[in-house]
Each structure stands twice: as C-alpha cells, then as structure tokens.
Length: 159
Image 1 (cartoon, rainbow, N blue to C red):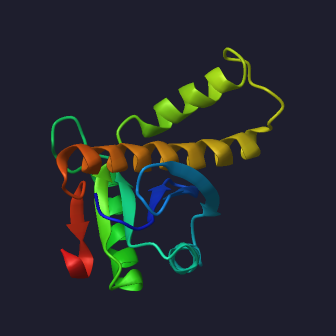
Image 2: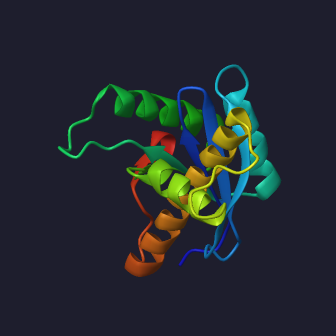
C-alpha cells in the first residue's frame, strides 16, 4: 500500500462531495461539500495542498454496459481539467456506481432505522455528498490494499 493522503471528489450537478484518507491510506473520512461552478477546481486544489494529498480520486459514473454515456463524458472532462490544475498530483477515475445509494442507506441506518432526523433538505444533501465521496474513497483504498495496485484509471498529465 502506498503511503500518503488521498482525496476523493464525487462531482454531481450542483455539489461536489469531498473525502480524505489518513496518511496510511486505510480509512476515509468526510471533508466538505463544494458548490459546482466558479472556483470549484480552485477549492479542490486548496484542499490538496492543505491535506498534502498524493492523489485525487474522482467518482466516475461507469455504465453497466461499459459504454461511456453523457454523464461519464462530463466527469471525464471535469477530471481532465482537474488533472491540469493539480499537476503533478495524479488524478484517477474510479467507478462510483452505487456510492450515493450506499451513503444514503448508511446515513438512514445511523439516523435511527430510516427516520429522516432533524436535518433539512440542503444540509442533508450536503452530508450525503460527503458520505458518497467517503464511500468512493474507502472502496478505492480497499481495492488498492487488496490488489496492490492504484485503483481506476489515470487521467490527464500522468496518464
């Protein structure tokens, strides 16, 4: 297992969930939610510096058929722009299928057997975005630990 913090970003239409690993690459934890639009890549770059991240994982919406649909093309373009901004820090696309579903299920079960709890809609979506990034990163860390290879596909300069 490679040493060093990894960041994961799970981009959506309106928000980007962010998670970070510990330096040993064992455990993923939520960091924050970033609004999509002006300044989002800059904020990710600031987090890379703040956490001294060795790599950034981007959630990639792979299709079950293996073809690259419109959403996947958008995420690939986002990851390519991010790779340009972060160079020489590597950016990798990692399959994110079901991360949001898994995150919502985990949040529901931790809130008391499916009860919504006191969180409002916007705050809850922000938490779900961070939880999805955390699930994405934990899956990537576990894959690397199991296989001995970095997960997913490198994009941009380092590809």
